[in-house]
Length: 217
Length: 321
Image 1: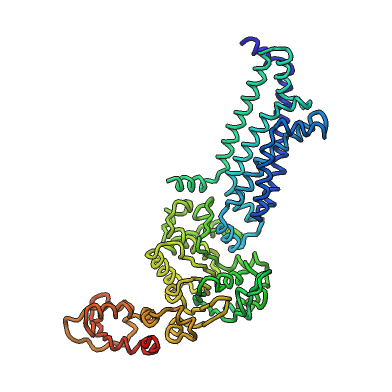
Image 2: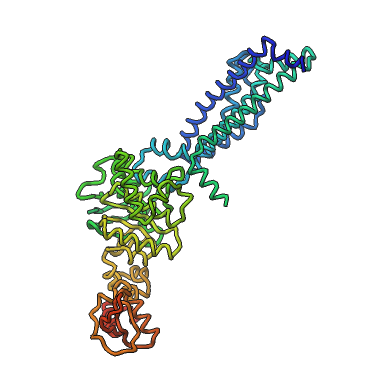
């Protein structure tokens, strides 16, 4: 127990934790910035949306380690290549959920909105996005948890993060360091899951929560 | 007034038009019903008025102005729009749904909430009870009332209604139709109303445009005239073999010149009954005449089967069938 506390007091613990969080947050932000506009761009065509969803689904099947292994020979070593790999991991869940969510908005609702004189931008901002919000946030949550967990692997291509500690533990055969690093990653992932879940509930419009309850009856 | 001038619509890649050289006028304050079998282009015709669909040829004038004079978005904010599946916004309260167009037109808040209250009262929903509810909490009939209120929100002179009462059971549909006719009596909008149901068309329409496959206007006239003299085989089969009875259903007992009050023991007919129901009543009672009474039970006179027969004389063809 004491030795575990010593791990948390190591000077490199805090710095690797910061790197880990930094990698995750930036990768997620870039992922959202790419995937959300892409989903919106294809959302007017059901065919394009279906194609995008299928490509993203295939992308999701590629293991995190494989993506890192692919990025390394192309971009080399360090923080930036790790970031690229994590962005690639972050995109598919957001893309899939955002496309699905936008596609599921009832055509009658969109027709009514158009028939009353909402512009395309207003239909997107006031109708489609709020109605799709819960599904989109669920995608971002999945993506965030996956990025936080996968950032552990960044150490293999010199990206730093809590993976460094785990690898160090292995090298020195020091169980405390290994467990300290692993526990922290697990905690980060749980915190991410819980806080994004709360965010998802906050962004679910009240009318939709009520509709869901009524459908359940 | 809405005027269709030689309006056609052919979709790219198709050789046959869905709407073919349509020309007719919808008069101010009237309900014009577009009715016909599926594939007759009735919804397409309606959607060209507010430019959700652009015609391939011809033009549509609203009060003498081509509807292309302003942007489609702006045009649509000044034309009421109600559709079959209602399309209420599930994430917005009833009040916000109704306020959609006033918000787009940037009315101030006080004016909007006053208008929402007025409209909820108009369609028979208690504002205090329903204002802050969400669509999922309302029954189908209530949702359709909100749909109508939303279409009326900015008090547009022209309204488009695509089977607005289509998604409810028959009993509720009749009630909604009656309510809407009462509302229309007060607001006198110029309305294009699409339905596939000839009975609804006869009930709701001041005028009916019967369209046949390929978007051809088969007949445009008042319900009375269409039922009395269908101008083609298609129209007469579309309105149905019971068109004489349908025509009787348009007349109320109080519209008929009655015989003098005569004799006791005759079945009593309310003066508010339509002639079709009165006839059914007389046949059912096995008598030639009935005694017409007012709501307050005052005897107005007598109505005979013979009188009803004389009134339906305009449709002698049907009798030969």
